[in-house]
Image (cartoon, rainbow, N blue to C red):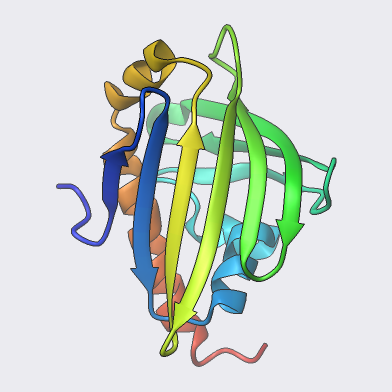
Length: 162
């Protein structure tokens, strides 16, 4: 089942836009997207967990994630931060280990209203073909499950000291 909170739309020949609202401040959501100790708690679909989570959070800094899932399957990807503007905006490149060409550009904007944060992520792929190949994967289900895990973690964090 696709997460009811996630919206994925085709915005152009190369762009997908993902939106989801979280019941937390944008500073908290931004931290969840950028701090390894928080990313390890939520990043990935159900049954997948980060076994490598490297974040050099500065323009030009690299990031690298490797997730391990059912049966020991691994999925690696990484890139470089292009823009880091806490707590409102994060721009980074992304390349999956399985990709043979090109990289995606991911722009995530965190917009807070009344204690809730709307996350809008625009993913620009190098070509329509790559965008379409991503759409044929279970990306939407996996992202929805990951964001469900994030929402649960944010709810749990309300009682944690910061």
